[in-house]
Length: 377
Ligand code: SMG
Ligand code: MG
Image (cartoon, rainbow, N blue to C red; front, top):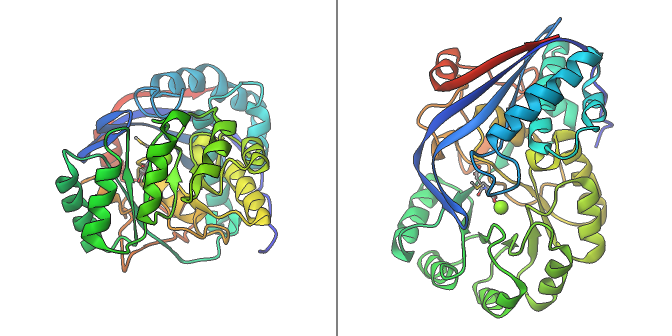
């Protein structure tokens, strides 16, 4: 992989924050709840050389993680944005250090950092892919399928996605909706690449049930136990033939190092928001690659902004499994970029234009905005 060259410093004049409410094409149900509208924060960094865009992937409630949209808004507007404006001129690689005195709030930090990176790269005319070291021009597209009314409805939903060309299916599971759902999909579609995601819904006491999933030849089981259960995940991994993949638990490169040292994860789901930014995500990628641990790019129902960034991240060489990088239309009838991601032959194109390589659809952005604030020095 060629060395990654740092970006030139930017001078930050203002940051605009918006909360958007974007309707989902269909409800999305996980072990912790159902969403019908995506509530997301869009960040715009205004620099002396132009504007950049970022996305904060929190949800409206602190269910997937402790972060949530109103909390992210508060920490961004009162602490994170003022800290960057105070520093005024800095390189994108310095953002994490400037924000480090604020503990946690990684999704908020990631969205702000992305807006700065995008502004800096657009000013240089360099693509995010060149900056991160992307090596592919398209990435395989997997889809995450929420819990449905019953296994028959799940089979129908999965069949629809397979018809669209998705190359890997992930189904959400929770206690009581695990073995039958997985069996139904396996039975209906034979040897398709299939994995399950529990979103922390189990404890070690459920190990016997989880071991029954071994019968279905899954690519992996994602985050069966709680975020801070690294040791229990290592114990569970010894009981299962199915590889354990961590999502929620990997909150940083340090957490990834600990998980690998403990044997808690055979595979890692990398999400830039969860780990505090795309540069931290790349550090985890590099660490996992050196250790021979496969990684794949997770999703947080991103708009076209985060979806473009994720496609670029997934084009790094260590991303050896298909990610949750589906077409925009899997979630939205209207996106906020002019050319939303589409699936072609089971793949999503990696953008190559300056910065994130996508342009904002100003009218759509405006239509979905429910709150906005422009913060200046
Ligand atoms: O963006 O395709 C997507 C969603 C993928 O299932 C997905 N994300 O735990 O991996 C995960 C979930 C987190 C969001 S659940 C609301
Ligand atoms: Mg997950």
